[in-house]
Image (cartoon, rainbow, N blue to C red):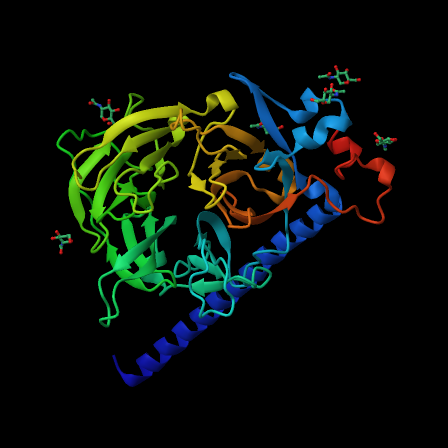
Length: 458
Ligand SMILES: *[C@@H]1O[C@H](CO)[C@@H](O)[C@H](O)[C@H]1NC(C)=O
Ligand SMILES: *[C@@H]1O[C@H](CO)[C@@H](O)[C@H](O)[C@H]1NC(C)=O
Ligand SMILES: *[C@@H]1O[C@H](CO)[C@@H](O)[C@H](O)[C@H]1NC(C)=O
Ligand SMILES: *[C@@H]1O[C@H](CO)[C@@H](O)[C@H](O)[C@H]1NC(C)=O
Ligand SMILES: *[C@@H]1O[C@H](CO)[C@@H](O)[C@H](O)[C@H]1NC(C)=O
Ligand SMILES: *[C@@H]1O[C@H](CO)[C@@H](O)[C@H](O)[C@H]1NC(C)=O
C-alpha cells in the first residue's frame, strides 16, 4: 500500500468513525431522556403518597388476595396494608425516581445483577456507607457493564467501573460479592478484601476487586458430561456464589445445563465436580438461575460449613436447599425445597438477605418482589412470606416488567434491577405506616396512610 492509499484509508475510517460516533451519540441521550420523560410522567400521575408500594399477603395455601380485597375497614389497614416487623413497626416502600440516575452515555438494555456493600469497615473513606454496583448490558457499547454509586452519591449519575471489554463483552449477568481473607500481605497479617464474581452468559467468567480490577478471567467450559445427548443445551452460565471460608466458588449454568459447577476461588479453575442437571426430581433444576449462601442459621461467625446453599430453581418455581461442607467438596446433600406457587409467586431469580433483620428479598421474573421473614428454627427450609410488592402492576408505565435482582441496603431500603426492558429502581423504606401528604392534596381524598381513595380502600 502506498502513502496516498494509506491517507485515503485513514480519511475513510475517520469519516466512518465520525458517523458511527454521531449515531451513537444521538442514540444515548434519546434513551436517557425517554426514561426521564417516563419518570416525570410517572411522578405527575402518581403524587407523593401514591408512589407507595402496596403489599399483599397470602391468606391460605393456594390463593393470594390483595389487602384491598380482604379488608374494607380503613381503621385496621395500617397493620394490614404495610409490613410489620420487629417491634410491630409498620413500614412500606416508596419508589425514588431521582435516585440511581444513569450517565448520558449509558444505553441500558437489561440490568442483571446488584452488589451492595453492607458494611462500613473502611473508615478511611470520607463517604463511609454502602456502595451500590450494578451489572448491565449496554445496547451500543459492549465495553461497558458495571455502574457504581458510592454512599452520598445516589442522586449523581453512576460512575463506570471496570477495565472495559475483557469483562463486559457478551452478556454480563450474575454479580456476587465475597469477603475473602487474603494471605498475609506486607507482613501485616491477614486482611479481608471484597471480591466480585461475574458470570457472563457467553461462557465468560471473571473475578475482580470491588473496583472492577480483574483478578482472573476464564473462558473455560467444564468438560461435556459423558451422558450429554444432542438435545442438551450448551454451557450458558448465569450466577456464582461461594461459601465463606471455603476455597470453592459455585457456578450456576442456569441458561444451559442447569448444573452447578465447582470452581476454585483463587484461580477460576474448574475443580472437576458438579451436581444438578435438567429435571423436576429432587436435586434437579429447570433454569438454576442463581445460587446463594444462607448463613442465617449458622450461629458461629466462622460458618465452618454449616450454611446452606439455596438454588433459585426458576422454572420449577421453587428454592432448593443443599448442605455443602468445604471439607468434603465431593458431597452435595439435598436438604429439601420450597415451592413458591402457594404464594402466587413463580419465577425466583435470586435470594438475598438483610444483614440485621435477616429478612430475605426475592425478585420474581413474572413481576413481583417478595419480602420473607427469617425461617423459623423448626422449619429452616421455609422462607415465610411477609409481603408481596406487585412491582409490574404498581410501577405501571415505568416498565419494571421483569424483576431480575434485588438487594437490601443496611437501612432497609432496597435496589431492584429488571430485564426486558432494563430498569434500575431505588425503593425507600418508610417507617410508621404514614407518609407526609402533599399540601395540594385534599386530606379527605386520602386514607389514613396517605393513599388516594381510589388506590386503597374501596
Ligand atoms: C367491601 O365492601 C363492598 C362494598 O361495601 C362489598 O361489596 C364487599 O363485599 C366488601 N368486601 C369484603 C371482603 O368484605
Ligand atoms: C379491627 O381489628 C381489631 C383487632 O384485630 C378487630 O377486633 C376489629 O374487629 C377490626 N375492625 C374491623 C371493622 O374489622
Ligand atoms: C437429553 O438430555 C435432556 C436434558 O438433560 C433430557 O431432558 C432428554 O430427555 C435427553 N434425551 C435423551 C434422548 O436422552
Ligand atoms: C488452582 O488452585 C487450586 C487450589 O489452590 C489448585 O489445586 C489448582 O491446581 C490450581 N489450578 C491451576 C491451573 O493453577
Ligand atoms: C400482580 O398484578 C397483576 C395485575 O393485576 C396480577 O395479574 C398478578 O396476579 C399480581 N401478582 C401477585 C403476586 O399478586
Ligand atoms: C375518601 O375517603 C374519605 C374517608 O374515607 C371520604 O370522606 C372522602 O369523601 C373520600 N373521597 C373521595 C374522593 O372518594
